[in-house]
Image (cartoon, rainbow, N blue to C red):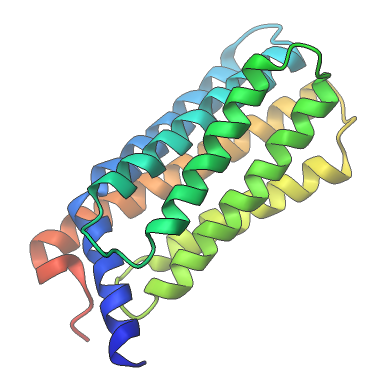
Length: 198
């Protein structure tokens, strides 16, 4: 790994350890959404997808928050902005495109899940030598990509199946992010910038 790559990953690890609470809030939002999807009696597919759109919007906003808190010259600034744009767009489309069908909304959500998952995997690979627990980020990304592919392959699955898929994904994804967030918090206290020492 050259010096520029070391600097890039070090800055990214530092950003995550200093602002671990952003990961925690993203995770909490996912868990709350998933639980709400499971507990809401008689939830319709449209309502479920709108709730998921709200979660995508929240994820996008948190990506913008991380970007805003990144130091000047942060090398992954563009990817944070890109993740934020995709999340916000997915959320806004679900709310402000009244003519789109539930199927169309599912396709929007599936696309967001795949893009979001790829970004999470990308960061996990970049950080694999810098932080402990990066596999949680990779696992969350893989889960997101699989979820998106499942929606693309079975967009007309029954409402109950979709509730189980969407709610289950949100809870699992959220729990992984919360665990990672608290690992980042602990690393930030144990090591300067939260990077690996071995």
